[in-house]
Length: 293
Image (tube, rainbow, N blue to C red; front, side):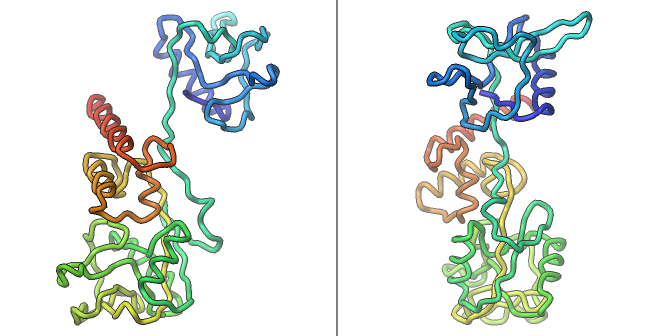
């Protein structure tokens, strides 16, 4: 159920409740009395209880253990603030879905922002596989490039004009095909003149502003990237759709590799596990979006 963290969120929920009317009934929201300390209130999500919006005289009765959004009239002004109430009563209720997983706390210091993502160059020279693993251990992935604007940004980061690993590699089953290690679609290229030039060179580097194919065993610095995307948008194309359901199913069947940040986006029901329930939940969300359209 919905939780309320500040006056802005309270105003939004109040406005939504008044517009929907709920047939004059007050809807439940996600607060409850702590059964071990009846003077303390908590949110069902475990979120910190740091904001309140009680109606006058509320909370009023220590045996009323649940939180409802109730209408309050002062003259012609109608508002909906909080009442404590008997949890056995039947009421409508307001649900909340967190549509953004913020991984900023897992980003190392010294990253540089571009749009919703963050990037950092590491100068320790390692082979491509080690660079990939190092980025994933930090909660990100080797940098991928989706368009000219992102390419220009990444080239601008490389102020030392070094050769650095990016997240591209040759498909070992089809050496003429290139893939991104995080599973992002390969839809943009920025090769240096004459590149790629050797099908034995199986990894992608930027040198200094455009791309080379290179032997993955060579030691280079590398660029890590951290993504900020909506939960369910596993392929990070800007929307959660049936392709994301397929990506989760392929991951569960061990057909498709997902980088740790994409695995995070696959946890649709936010229970800490990636399983068939996440694919099912995402299908339900997509169906609701389609109905709204």
